[in-house]
Image 1 (cartoon, rainbow over the protein chains, first blue to last red):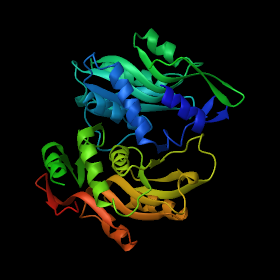
Image 2 (image 1 turned 90 degrees about the horizontal axis):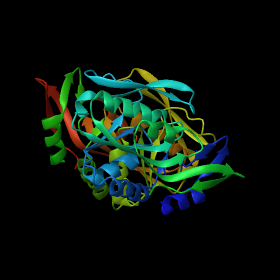
Image 3 (image 1 turned 135 degrees about the vertical axis):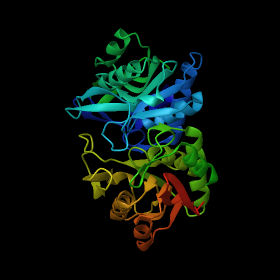
Length: 193
Length: 193
């Protein structure tokens, strides 16, 4: 997605050690217009496979996911990273290790929102080691629902997340794919949309 | 907002002890269409005061906030509840006590996203004791920016949050105002929009 790649080059900051900071338009301050375009591109890619739900994980995945849900005209569900006293019954969970934060957390979705006949598009802001997307995949499979694909805003293609998901038989659509960081700038490889 | 009140009566669950669960359309599964309408109502209410940013707090505030930002044609910023290793410079923080989770957490926004000439609309999903909104207010005031108002999806009017914000001189616009829970159902008082 050319618009996204241009925005990353313009406003992204490479912090070193494989960290790209995109807090001016995606992970902290959010550009609704870009998110809306991103949602449309995901929807266009998955419009013919009968998506019934978009699933993401709090918090940075929510903005691109809600616009994907809008473009597909389906509900969006965001998985919780933290326990909440109002979540009581029928919780589906998966363990997710974050390399960035160096902690394992329990990600959860209330089972009542996923049925066996659901066809799910997972959306997330970043794909690196694929642990978050794998956790969501596990939860959706626990519900007996189908994952039609994973839509990623920014993929770190030098890490193993994409291979992990593809080995699980799930197609990945990444709108920007980072091949490497070179001299503190981003080098892209060809994106999926 | 009649559409919202009807939805709360239809799909909300009163768990007792003042807890209303709206996880089928707002706090877990999200109805984009309702969020879009909510965003438009907030925008209509604040269209003439020169809003330059919409500020919310992760995670359930993000969906209504992004649509308010879209309707006002400004960026949205979501405050972080948890520390993140990519947030390094110029962080504005406030302590927020959650009565629901019984923990104090540090809420933060990168200072670079708030300037003195910014006019901010705060948006959040719930207003109960007002601690989260008060924390956001403090952060925005630290930046020297102005808070034009607080837009709330669901206010628990029997708690002290609204009074706290109004005493601080900030107008509150709540789209649904719960006067009490009676026999496990919701009794509304007149909403602000």
